[in-house]
Structures are given as C-alpha cells and as structure tokens.
Image 1 (cartoon, rainbow, N blue to C red):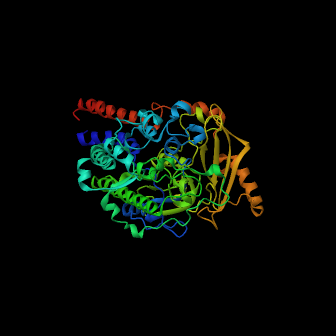
Image 2 (image 1 turned 90 degrees about the vertical axis):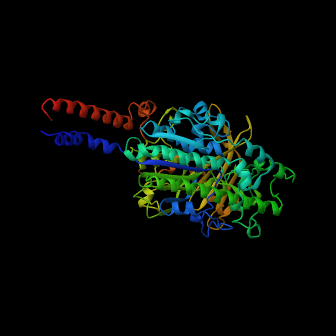
Image 3 (image 1 turned 30 degrees about the vertical axis):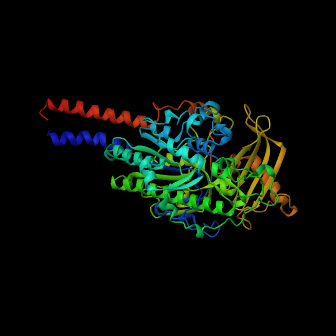
Length: 556
C-alpha cells in the first residue's frame, strides 16, 4: 500500500462532509433612511424627480431578486432594525422607540448575525446595523465574533447640529474624513482579512456594513451635489396633507426642525404647513446627493469583493431600514404609516440563482429577511414562531423566506398583505396605528394600545381610520375611509387587519405545535448544524492523522 493511495483513502472518507460543510459568505449591506428612489426602482407609478444616479446599486439589482414592494414593520430606525434583525414584529420585540433594547423588554432572541456566528461563520459588523447605544446594548455584542467597529463621527456630529445639509469640500474631508468613508475603509480592510479563510473553505463570513447616509444631516462630498443642479430639482406635487386624514396620522418632523438652519425658519411642522420652496429644493437635492454618495461607497465594497475572488461565493443583501418623506404631504423624515415611510428598497443576490436579474412586485416584509438568508445559505428553514409564545422562543421567525419569488416573481402562492405599525402618544395615552398594504389598498386604524406588560391593541377605542386606493391614488392624497361607496371595503379590511399577519399567511405555511416550544428556546451553538459540521471536520482530521500513523507501521 503506497502513500498516495493512503492519502486518497483518507480524503475519500473526509472530503464529502468537508465540502458539504462549505457555505456561501454573506455580505449584508444597509443604508440608513434610504427610500426606494433608485434607478432600478424607477417606474411610472413611483416616479423619481430627478432621476437618481445609482449605477452601482443598479448593477447589483441587475443580478439580484429586487423586491419592489417591500415594507418595514415600523418606519423608524431602532424598531425597524430590531424587527428585521430578529425576524419578529414590533409587538413581539416590544421596541417602539430609539432607546429600548429588545433583549430587555422582548426576549433573548437570536439575531441574524448571531445565527451565522453560531453556525461557524465569522460574524463581523461595522457602522450602523443595530441602532447605536442603549437601544441594542451597544451594538448587541453577542451577535459578533470580533469587537464591533464604530467610526469617529465627533467632528461631523457637531458640524451637523448647525446644518441639516451641506456639500463637503475635499479640504474639509482631508481634515476630517466623513463617517461613511471611514466605514468603507474598514469594510475593504476587513474583506482582505476574511478572504483567505473564506476562499480556502476554512470559515465563511457574515460581514455587515451599515452606512449612515442618507440619514440627517445630509452631508456628502460636493461632487455628488454637482450631479443635481438646483434648477433641475422639482418640488413635490402634493405638498398638502391627505384630504380627510385623521390628525393622529401626522408627524411634525421634529427631527429635521431641530437643526439650527431649519429652526431659524420657525416652521411649526403642523398639518398643511410646509417649508419654503428654496429650502425644500435644497433638502431634496442634498438627499439625492447622499444617495449617490452611498451608492459610490457600495460600489467600492462590491469591487473589492470581486478583486478578492469572493464574488462567486458570496450572497449579497441590500436594504434601507425604512423610507423617508421628501416634502410629499408637507411631511419630512419618517415616523408615519404612509407609503413613503413604510416602503424601502430590498434586493438579494445569490450566485447562480439570481444572476439574470429578477423583479417582483409581490408584497414582502422586512421580517422576511432573516428566514430568507438562512435558507439561501443552505440551512434548514426557520420555523414560524408559535402563536402566543413568540417572546419565549429563542430561534424562530414571524416572516417567510421569499426565495420562492425567484422562480415565481408574481407570488402566486405568496402572502397578499404586508403589515406595519407606528406608536403615538405617551404613557397611559398610547395610540397605535396598525396599517396593512394589500395589492390595491393601504388601510390603517389608530386605536388605543395597552403597553407593558400586555402589548395589545384595544380595538374598541378608535382615534381614526384611513383608506387609500392605490389604483387611483398612488400618492395617498385622499382618505376614502368615510365614503359610503367604500364601506364594504373598509369592513373587510378591518376584519383582516384585526385578524393579523398570521391570518394572511399562504395556506401551505404550517405553524409548529405549541408543545414544540422547548425545541425553540433551547437552541444553542452546541447542537446546530454548523457546530456539527465543525466537529465532524475535526474528527475527520484526527482520523486522517491516526490512520496515516497506523499505515506507516506497514511501510505506507
């Protein structure tokens, strides 16, 4: 028996499971406050004025599954991110503000980066993935394999308090690099460090890169402002509140009014008031500039992925954490249940599966991202969270994998409703706006909400109802809820809204029995498939070593 034969015999034993354990890397790209005004989303129903220049995201979209009607579960940073990163809806995470930590008030839920970390991925995060500070226990340390990276933004934070928007010159950048430029440099550096182990099959990576723009203040290098001459910037066509809108639906965009330059205008933020035309155009121009700036940074990350030879084995997801009002309805920022705030860009590239580019108008939700990435990476599907016990389950999902939309973009057997919500009021006076988007309608009810410890709506106490018919009113300018001709529609949609998201699931979705809760809550890295593969690989290596020693006795 010669040495080559012995080696071949050893590899024959070890290789099948080694290659079975090889997984695709995941590049998880996030932009803050980015609405779906991108070249790849431009269409007559949702026109972009002017046409956004986003060549890198458009290039990614051309080889991705693009979800053109994807909706966040709450249109503000921390609640949206806590929801999508845990796969749970806000009434499960119990996160409705910018300070509450889901592990404190909701449950010890497994997050997306934590899941992959526990399945033998190297999980690395930087920028804004979770909402920073106490809202996520300082970026949820348990989710990452290495210390989390935060850029130094002290200079631009002080500068930004005075300016809601500003074109940054090159000398200014040389003295104080912009926060997102620092994140780009860290992302490129990290990719180079992760590449050897990923390419050898030793360890795949989950790399989360969260850019801060186009969040306020709207600061970007001046060359991106130059892409959009001010004279070409249009004003919103509907700078008025929807006719018949209940007052509770309105947000007074205090976030924007707190900046010194906007505060000097003495804007009240009240219903049917707006900012001066020049201010509106400058803000819209600055927002577009920030989108193009982030597009350029994402392009450089994707280019580095290609240069390192990682592109063919890396899943890429991209999304904005919610939409943003740009003066439509006289509104600014987020914090509403309108289409402009709840709809956000979402796309997924899977090598070999989406390369030809796929566009879907099926209704999707951001709670669908977690189960989708798990399935795309080759792991078993996440179970649907047991009804009434979701806060007790460590690992489950309140969304669905949208991978079926790759082969069936129309979603013939897919959910027909997307749910969002937004909390108004203070202690003991809380009002929750529960909103649903169907193919044709947006329907919202504002009702009394019982918070801690119940976290349930009181449907008997209403503060307003909204109905918008997107076939005739895609801008949501007229509330039809009180019109007699729509009474039957309102009655039906009210029943569906109150029945909730579980009742809107496709008929082929199965809910695990309640008795299975123990299997959810005891999931740990020591029993998952990634750890099993790791242990098997270690066993195979030890076996090969011992086997070779044994054969050496016989001169092999």
